[in-house]
Length: 241
Image 1 (cartoon, rainbow, N blue to C red):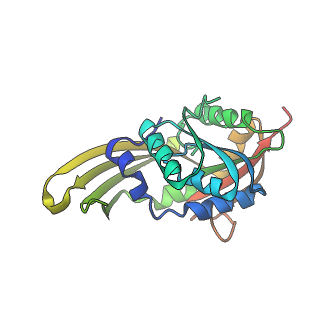
Image 2 (cartoon, rainbow, N blue to C red):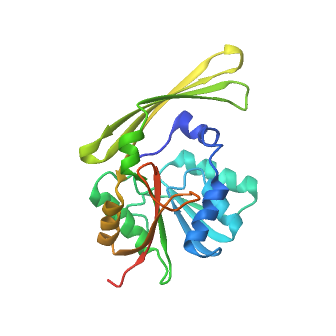
């Protein structure tokens, strides 16, 4: 299973500081048609979405596979004055769906989520959309951020796509440069993710005992899904099986 460790975990919130967590949480709440109740955030990372859902009015529990990310999630919640439970767990067995790389792993994760649904509960699943992943992935990217300490973080990402297995592998190399060139630290992570067509995801949801209500372009003003849509959101509920 994927997780972020070392420099990547330490600077996770810096790297994703521009991500619109509040707007994305609002989008999901509107898709669910509710603004309160219990919410389970699987693969919660440093808890930024969990915090946004808590501010809306949900009682949130976050689950992630990474100890370092959860440590930062608890710190983020404490600093924000929000009471959120964060637990270490694997979403395939715990009592972002693309992390399991096999169909069996995806169905296991979806089945686990289904088992946690209340009778009238719903599951929102965000996944990488195959047409965009196949056509628009950048082989190499370099990004830089100033650190709060006055240094610089540099991240090089190298992406490989394997169409037969519908897998995207991204190798990250990070360099943390200290202020005034006093020194540096390095780190590396590899993230492997599945991407899906909408029919593929619909079939996997069905195999997990879930019925789909809709698929929409994630966090977009227009819900229509096109070949340029990177992320898709599925809304599903437990079927009668």
